[in-house]
Length: 270
Image (cartoon, rainbow, N blue to C red; front, side, top):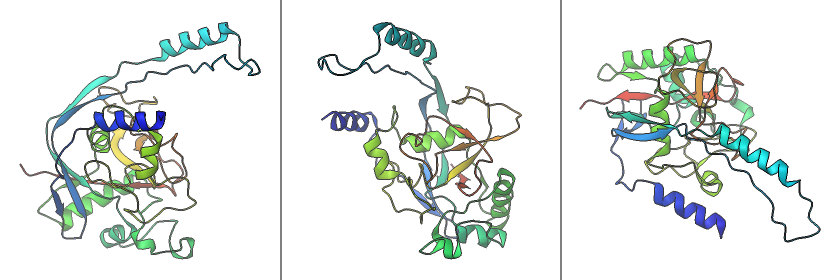
């Protein structure tokens, strides 16, 4: 009953929209148009679970421990901040595949290819790439398709697209429907359900590079740092589980390498 209630509340928090316009570029890469809008980023409201005392045989901690935990949770809480994206953009409907990467770059750096997967590896997301590799890819893609400009998404663009209108985090039951988790290899793109805006694998499969520098914190800052030692990864990978799959927090690259890929943005022509 509780799981159903949480799922229902999450669905109510989503903005119900018609299917988003899509575009396919000359290399067969599909993009979904994302319209301007706002979201609350970095909201963190931890809670303390205190077991019921109706069962006399159940062991519990002293009340003082729970009070200390509640105080610590209140101190750690963060109200979040509003982010407004005032320009539309197109973002990849899927993560960039090994096949697409090889078309642009002329080689395939992925670990999970050949006999390391049981199906067509070319349809798996490319991985084992650095942030610098991703930058070379978008520059070469822009050179091949001179009618459009490609780049990595900013962290806020990525999170806005991943949320797809949701105000709160995703219930675990919903994560299991859309996220590629708990595996031993990457999976072919598009095997799970898309999010509300038609984007696949925003959670799981491979971590995705974004443009921003990492701020060495759990959440993004209102103004991203201009310099840093590492760049931000979003979305978790196949090695994680539902506890890792969230659009709200971020990680730092290069990570494991074998589970790090990308999704690209195409500039929208208004």
